[in-house]
Image (cartoon, rainbow, N blue to C red):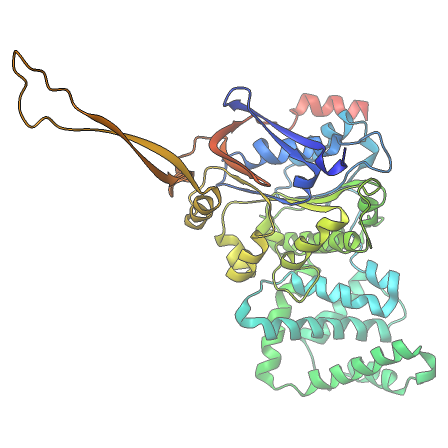
Length: 475
């Protein structure tokens, strides 16, 4: 049997009795989006059951066990406790790696540079610039801003011998936010770059050096108003990179590379508090997501039998959503490409408004069109109502009409009404139905299978404190 038709996940239901929702590997690779308001059951009714069963899938096979990158923006310990339990029960306790402010691991922001040298800095610049909110009306500014980030990174790595995260952030702050032509440090560094012998570089690197010099000259002659726009765009990024939490996540401890997910089948949990450090959470989750996309897209082909599936789980997708079509780190582009390479996304959102603020209406619509599996839980988003009504189509309804007697019955005659049936078609999920769903009930669309009758899904919860202590003793 083709592995793509193998059922990986089966969501149980309280109602209708005996009903379940099977999800095959082909369905998983079609990406899954869960929508619903806060407390509607997105995490406990869909995310947790799917996460546990994907972790158990082929758990005993080192070549085919699933790899996962889980983004936890609540950072309350619940997701970590659930993953510890799931990995322990699946016999994969050594596969779980946690990146947060307290453990000894980090995400290597400069991995592309360490892998490819100056050529890899383009990937770092694209990742950093993709973390800023985007809009179709400002596409020119966003593309040029990415070029300026690349300029700063190249300038730093061409003129510094000892490279560290703190020094890089400090240089970007001085170069982008405090740019001054008379700054003696910048003048000295540019003089060194201009006086460097072209023979010292390879031809390809020499082109990068010349491009860096030209871009620096452009940056230096920009008018004050234009430069101030780019500086205002750089300020939130530099602030996020300078945050102590970001320093811990990106530079402290041994790095966890996303190759661990695609090659070794690791389960990597990135936990960062989006309430306390919203800029850092957006930056860290965007970088982690982008690096995972990069590793998946490095697969040149997908053999159905030999490739492990590797996926991203984002319980708060709007926080790390990326738009546009000019970057492989964009959800609009990546979601349509990673499927053929064994990659998938399991995401959740409360509605469309947060996505619109993050990536714009057109990018949000383009990204949502890539999700083959949809769960609609209780929510009050008007556009999600329209989506559900459109996706689930119509259902047949039979009306029974009867005639009205035009004269009263008598003792000798009884007039009976004439009954006849009338067939109409009505929306399977009428507008307003999502707002009236009980807790835990959902409409589902899995590939081409439609579940237009509300499903009361069985929840799963993270272990309590006692269970966590027992798990720690076992670990």
